[in-house]
Image 1 (cartoon, one colour):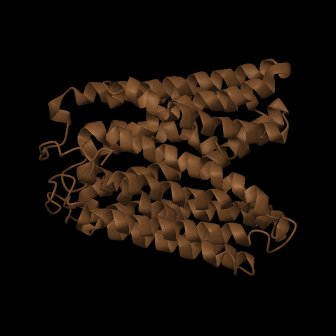
Image 2 (tube, helix red, strand yellow):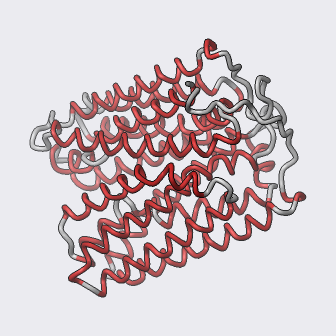
Length: 424
């Protein structure tokens, strides 16, 4: 039951965020008349808040109750979303977006730690997969529903979306409190020793913790995979790919919305099937597959520029292919990172890797703006093909590193916990 509540909490939170994400740029730039600079700064400050919060949230999850960390972060996110209702000027709007980013991202590592503590090893990929599917579904439903209530012609037209986002995060926090209740009969222990307290390096200084994490060769390769796969798709999902579609492929705006919808539908339709088909594959092998799929996606997008009559169809197809890779990426990355983390530093490691992904994803719009602004569409495609191939190489090296025991961290390996399967 705890796994179900975790999944539901993730979906509800993203439903709230989905009501805001598609419209906040136009709201700030046009509806409120603050201009594109303020709108872009709001997105950047959201990312900065996320970048700062991820390591802090992960560190706290190692030292105090991850339930308390996750719930506290949800409350902060709700406060940030609610503050946007009363934002009367650009400064207050920017501060609200910064706080919103802090709260959303700080909760992520703590929730991952809870999955690792409450779910047996055999079920972890499945629960992470369901969590990712729930988030995708929540985002899609939130964006769809907001389309009927958001009115960008009025200065108050986004208030329902901001209120829905705040409510979604508060409800998500309540669900996590319910999941953490002891009535389920399963003690809340550490990742390393179920039922016990945090062990190992959890009480060391942040600098010592960072050194301990970076000393593991397999984690260094995992960090490179995290960065390259973030740059290879997620960094361009919201800005670079739509900009390429509009400026190079010259497709209609509605095609971009259709592509995003197809991406969500493919994830929802294939996620659990992919998990079953890949259950016996190593995480490193699957990440090699993700890099290869990313590469194929960019090549298909390159073909779209050579066939103008098919450009719209190929652009939508590209988002569907990306989604197939996402169904392998989401369920394996956090469990892999946690399995390689030094004892007592699981939350810290997850937080650091989330910060890496967030930070490099924030660079994506800048890269796209410079390259596409210069009219170098082919260079934009070529760069991302190279990045995706680097991800394949890094995953291959990770697989080799994981076969050498000397390259793995020394940690306590507990007996497999009783599976907290979704049927619990």
